[in-house]
Length: 522
Image 1 (tube, helix red, strand yellow):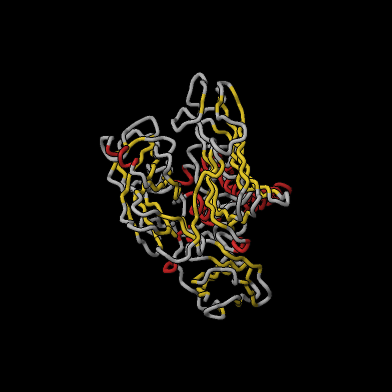
Image 2 (cartoon, rainbow, N blue to C red; image 1 turned 90 degrees about the horizontal axis):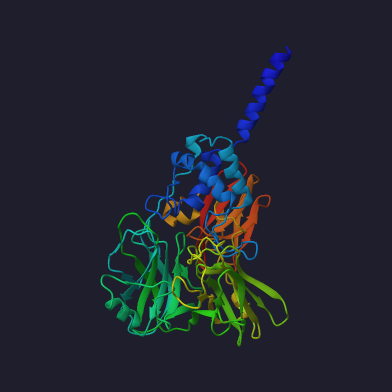
C-alpha cells in the first residue's frame, strides 16, 4: 500500500513540475520573436536564427547564458538609470522564464498555440519618401578585421529643407552592423571618394570631414528616425549625404548596397533640431587634454552651461576601443539632477543615438555633465595595442575620443508633454505578438470589442466586460502609448496628449486571449 501511495505521489509531483515548466509555444516564442528575431533571422546580422522551435532548441544554452549575462538583446544604456524610448531590454521575469525553459528540457509545447513567426521585409516603412539615395554596390572583402567604409550619396536638394523622417535600409542585413549618416556641404567627402579606387573610402572615427554634421544613426532593430511634431533636422541645400557603414570581419566576400530614405518639409515654422557633440574632448573638456598613458585607467569630464532654454530629444555617447563607461546628466538651476544616460559597459560595436521617452526641457543655466572612463591596460580585451602604448585624441583606431551627441532645439516646458514612447518600463510586446511587425492591414478588428466615440477626441471608452485584465493602446508600428487597468465594465483612456491619427486598442483577457479594435483620434 505504501509503495502504491509513493508511486501515485511521484506521478502527481512529476505532473506538477511538467505543468510549471515553460514551453516554447506558450511562453518563449513571444520573447524570441519580439526581442531576438529582428537580428537572429534569415538575412539578419545575428549569427544564427531564432524564428522556430528547432533552431531555438539547438541554441537554447546560448539563449539562456546570453540573457542571464544581459549580453542579449544588445542594449548598452542602463535602463535603471534612465529608461529610454523603444529599449530592447528583457524583464527579469523574461530572463528567468528562458532559464526555466532551458533547465526544464526546453519543451516545445502544443504547436497549435504558438504565435506565427514574424515576417521581415527590407521595404520602406515610411508613409512618404521625398528623397532616396542608394550607394554603389560595394564588395566587402574577406578580412579578419572590421571594415569602416564611407560612401557619398549625392541627392537633389536645391534648397534648405527639414528632415522629419529618416530610415536606413541595409542592402545586406547580414553584413551591415551599423550606419552613421552625415551631411557634408564642403565637398571634402567627395574628394576623398574620388581619391580612392572603387566605391567609397575607409575612415574609422567618422567620415574624415571635421565640419560634417551627423543627422542619423542606425543599428539592427532600430526604428526610422521620426522627429517630434513641429520639429525637423535641417538639411542644407546641395549637401551630400555621406554614410559610414561598419562591416564586421568575414571569411567570405559579400556585396552591399545600402539605401537612405527621407521625408522632408520646406518652409513652414519647424523648429530646427541639431545633432551636435555638445560635450566633447576639445572645447568643453575640464581635465584634458585627452591623453591616456600605457597601463593607465583614468577618467575625463566635460561640462557645459546651457545658454538658453533648450529641449533635448536624444543622446548618443561616442568613444573608441579603450572606453569602459560613459555617463551624462544635467543639473538644473534649482540643483535638481536629471539623469540622461549611463552606459556602464561600453562596447564600440554597439553604439547609437538613444531617444528619450519624452523630450527633456532644460532651462537656461542648466549644467550638462559628461563622464568617460578608459582602460589602457592588458586587462582591456579591446586594447588595440600590445603592449599598451600612449593614446591621444584622434580618429584612428589607435586614438581615442570623448563625445556626447545631443539632438537639441530651442525649448519650451510644454515639449515634455510630447509622447515618444509611453510603454511601461521594459514592456514591449503583447500576447506573444511582435508588435513592431504588426501593421494596420495585418490586424483584424474584433467586432465584439466596442470602442467609442469614433472618431475620438480627448477620451476613448472601451467596453471590456468583467473578464478583461488590461487595456493597451498602440500606434500602427506597435509601440505602446497608453495602458490602463480595467474597470468593471467600461475602461476610459485619456488620449488628449496623443497625436491625431489611427491607433489599435488591445484588450488582454483573463484567459490569455487578446481582443483588438481600431480607433481614430481627431
